[in-house]
Amino acid sequence: MTAQELPNGFTGFSQRKPEGFVSARDAMGGHPPLDGPGAFGARPRATTAVPSAYEAGAAAFGNGAQGAFQYARDHARPEGGAAQFDPEKLRMISAADRRWAWTEVDLNAIRHNVASIRQRIESGVRIMAVVKADAYGHGAVRVAKTALNSGADYLGVATVDEAIQLREGLVNAPILVLSQPPAASIPLLLAYKVMPSVYTPDFAIQYAETADSFGLRAPYHLAVNTGMNRIGVRHDEVVEFMGQVSFHRALDLVGTFTHFATADSAETLDFQIQAKRFIEAVTALRAAGFDPGIVHASNTAAAIRYPDVHFDMVRLGIGMYGLQPSSVTRPLVDLRPAMSVHARITDVRTVPMSEGVSYGMNYRSPGSVKICTVPVGYADGLRRGLSGRTDVILKGQRCRQVGSICMDQCMFEVDLRVYGTRRRLDPQIGDEVLLVGRDGDAMITLDDMASALGTINYELAIGFSHRMPRLYV
Ligand SMILES: *Cc1c(COP(=O)(O)O)cnc(C)c1O
Image (cartoon, rainbow, N blue to C red):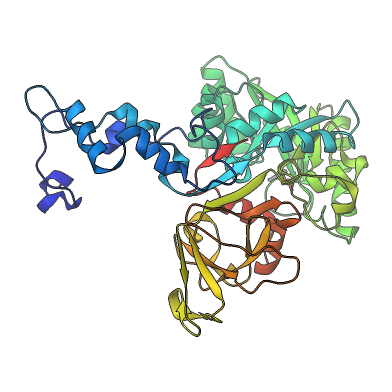
């Protein structure tokens, strides 16, 4: 049953469908290109008394009902049909004007972070930019291009589709999938020139056979398990593994790597054991006549802390985004968070003393506050566990988030009692607030949120990518 067959279409719109009707979805051409340059239109201004949606509305439809009727007349078909929506005009309504919540990604911060970590790495060592999970929520294609222009020369992803997305975004650098994908995806690897990590002989042989049938080479990186026990050939079985697969003429070992489980821990013994096993495995490969290719082991934490394990390449993930892998690395390198989370106030009210706010009414008004609503909720990555445990920044001042965070909205409190030197706030619908980021001396970080939740900043960053439009600055 299609929407048209349902009573009233279940769309809330009347079923009458004038000839030449353009559905909203057709008009948008699927998703608006949020990531594309200029997709957002002008950058929303930091502060504005007149919300820009009103201006865009005025521009598109004229002012008030009078203007809307004029618009309808201008666009009426000569044979007397109903008003038509102009797909171009609909498309012009920017993402920031469709919903007052968005993330911003500062590409200069990413450049700064790559350069900052680069300073701790010898010049011959390559950098792999790890852009899995949509670049930790920052947008894979834009981040990949930025990283490649700032000194990275390799890309790392988690899945075949993430690699294809980069190729379709016209990224040409070598791409390594940081795990062994299903064998059925091998033709995609070859067609898109994406290298897999390999650790089973079955996969290696199928990969080689398929490549051979297309007259291609089958480049791969050998994953070595040195103690994390996630993926890879056991560190003391790498020579045996190569003995099983290396007969195949198409196979091309272009890299050998491992991954550290504790590079970010204060305690270093487990790290030392993994490093030693990896060095022994690479030495054994060479002794048996196999060229290990590009040798790599370091994630951000190891790249910052342990020059001895940089080998031929380091793999930068979290640090590139300006987040510290742990408190251990904080004093060692200057990183700038690239992501900030923004919203505009959608409603403001005074709530009498002792009245509750939000589901469960876990918060009761003390009576001297204004309660403001912003359209960001746990479906946007503002985790519900942060209810009452995070702040928002309004005009440079911290305000407490209050009440349960809902799926799509949450509330915060503006205290109307004026203290000493603080400016009294007078929140208005349309005012911009920061949920993550810095405004003057006030700062809210993903680290703050992660520690309130007992998780890591990686998880918070990725969460904020799910529904909010993204704006590159
Ligand atoms: C995710 C990942 C990285 C990046 O780690 P960060 O801590 O974000 O720098 C590096 N190597 C592998 C194998 C990974 O899976």
